[in-house]
Length: 235
Image 1 (tube, rainbow, N blue to C red):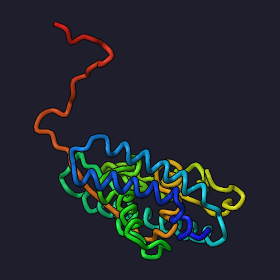
Image 2 (image 1 turned 90 degrees about the horizontal axis):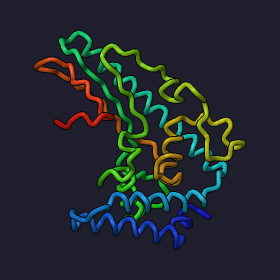
Image 3 (image 1 turned 180 degrees about the vertical axis):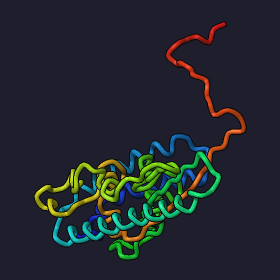
Image 4 (image 1 turned 30 degrees about the vertical axis):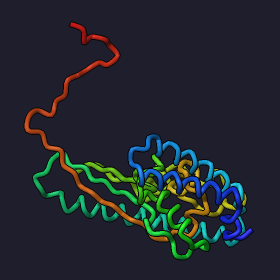
């Protein structure tokens, strides 16, 4: 089946319409409870349906390779910008400073995706977090780098592959993907988040966030040493 045919199957259409109806109802009535839990569960079902229809053809393998490369480059750019920001702050009087870099997939639906309709665009709005955070493990994006002022930064390979493997291809055909050098961020999206593989194959643009935050104490930074395993709060 083509991608267009896959997204027109009754199962995919039904689950996506249900997701969008739940989200739309929440917009109309913000007091609706447990919406996030319901949407997250429906996204898991949607992912299962779509991924079962995925077959790694040569065309899809090339798209996956291109996405993986774009994903790697976005993470390296984030690392570079974060280190440049930290370097610029080295000679300030700030003490307890932390620097955080995050990479998100673009909030704009990919124009190259074969399916171009309002249902698809609104589904991407749900998945990408444009409306709300319905994917808890994606709250900090595809990858995050956290550094203190004098902390040694991880190498590029440590950031991209966690220093453990050079091909995070769990869940895919191992033989067909043994030469792909898939990064850890792909693994996190594919295995741990509620995105289906059809959602990000055409993604090439990303949003990079770099922030700097200082913690300053007007008094002592010491904290009370409390043992919460003891019921020692009775007078």
